[in-house]
View (cartoon, rainbow, N blue to C red):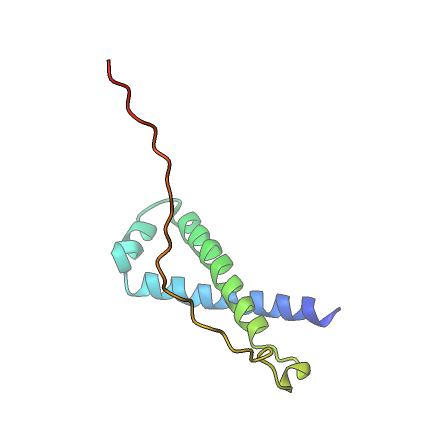
Length: 107
């Protein structure tokens, strides 16, 4: 399996594990009376599943984004920053702009 695909799968699993911990904390601390709503409904498990999957997608994307941004390329060690050319400041001299205006018609 290519390294990039393996890295993606690992980070997605980490993201879904973080989402599971997040949903468990939401239920444990009874945020917005969520524990009561889930336990007193016949399809409360579906709400927890949807909450976990939707948060898992978000956390997996963030986790993979962080992993990609932390990758270091060995070619980036050299000097950089462009040509270091001097930028002259803009001049602030007023310029006359002529605007033609049609004469109003009088009846």
